[in-house]
Structure formats: structure tokens, C-alpha cells
Length: 188
Image (cartoon, rainbow, N blue to C red; front, side):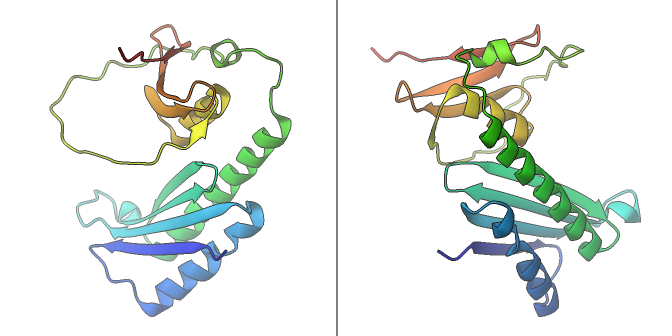
């Protein structure tokens, strides 16, 4: 099955040269992780950036067939440099994901017991009105995979997932003391 690659641009035009460069390099990600389903590359020119070094932004999002979602973003004064750095980061994330898959825990402990508490308390976020809505797929995964996805995406507060064991939607969240909690809703 061919890798689906989507290149998007914001405040800039994606020339054929940029598109070929990006597509050629991203197609090699399949060597690192064989079950990549889709790769989305977002290139942007942020005119309001304070520094010229931060104006060109490249974001790469990889979606795997098992529901993995990996994302990197890099900024530079050159779009090619930003993309290359983001791609290197993505390759490291994929290698880390593959390593976690191969090692696995398998000792029967819950996800909350395995995670080390953070050194400092997370800052409180003020409540705000709904500014944006998102939709996404919820492939089935167990608690350990959900915790791994939460960390890889950089979601510090919570992660919603489809629990493969209970066949219900669960919410994994970080508690104030740095441990993790799991919300398992019951419908009457």
C-alpha cells in the first residue's frame, strides 16, 4: 500500500521543487516504520514572528495503522532547513516508538504505577470559552499504549482513548501530584 503524503502551505506557495523535495524525503520514513498510513506536512511562513530565524515553520504529522500519532515542528529562516530538522526529529520519535514496542512492560503493573511523578507541579490553566473543535479517530488501545501516546503527543493534562479491554471510551489524565488517573464512564 502506497504511503499517503499530503503537503499543505500557509502564507506561502508550495513550488514543485519544494513539493518534490519534501515528498522524496518523507517517503523514506517507511523504512523506519513499516505501518505508516498517512503523513501530513504543513509548511508556513509566519510573517509576524519576532525573529527572522523563526519565520519558516515545518510541521510533520505521521499517522500509523495502529492509531499511533507522531508530530514534530521546527522553525528556521529557511524552509528546507526547518523541514530537515523536523524530519530528523520525526525519525528519532519513530525509533523511540519502535523501541518501546519491542521492549514492552508485560509485568502486569498498571500505567499509573510505572510512570514517575514529575519534579514540579504543572501550572494551572485558566478556563476559557470553546475556541476550536477537533474530530479524530479513536483506535482501540490498552492503558499502556494510551500513556505512551499521551507522552509522544506532548499532551500534559489528558488523553482520550478507546480502551481495547473494556470496549469503552476512557480518559487518561495527569493528577496534581504527578501520578496518572483513568476515567472510565458508565452509561445508565
